[in-house]
Amino acid sequence: MMPKAPSPAPEAVLFDAYGTLFDVYSVGLAAEQLFAGQGTALATLWRDKQIEYTRLCSMSGQYRPFWELTRAGLRFAALRLGLVLERAAEDRLMNQYRHLSAFPENREVLAALRTRGIRAGILSNGDPEMLAVAVKSAGFSALIDPVLSAHAVQRFKTDPAVYALGPQALGLPAHKILFVSSNGWDAIGATWYGYTTLWVNRAGAPLEQLDTEPTRTGRSLREVLDFFPDA
Image 1 (tube, rainbow, N blue to C red):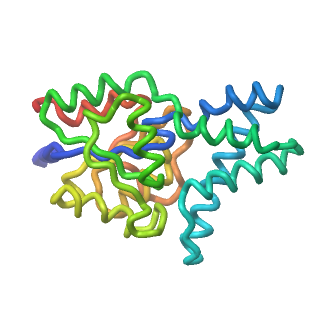
Image 2: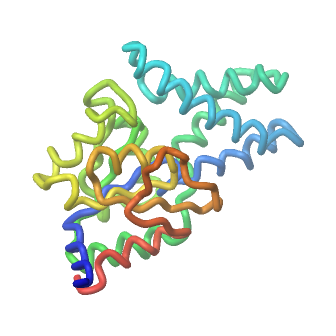
């Protein structure tokens, strides 16, 4: 049997933002300062509810901007944990969400892609303003283009209309674009759409049990560079 020919390298990369480039759980430190002993629980439940609200609104045709759903998720999480969320504390946590910490390997990887001539952008549920602040705060403005927001279609991942923004903006078919996400469900949705995909499974989570696998699975953003060995 002839060996299977290797797939050609992608021609561009699109990163998910929240959880992939920016650590959504880095808000836990501020949350812990406000609610001692509950910071991790609040950050975790906040993120879970934020994503649940995107699905609820998208599937129901009741779009609301991601920033609003992020605030609604925080309020729910506080209520669920029995925490008194005063306005000053809410504003502090929401502002922290605008300036989430970037994962430490990001700059190295983005700079390497730039050196290799590989275009790198973002495709995210985040609102344009949220993404602009996060990218600028992390110092990535010169390394990321385009920055694509689900707000343009007023739906959220994993709706195909969101994934379609990538090929439209880059002028490439989906399979020639590497889509990178640390969210297993996002990696699966992008795979179904037709992207070449990398699931950055930092937490060592099990694969989604939907008879679909990302093109590759790794533990660090650095594994993006393995797709471009000769670039």
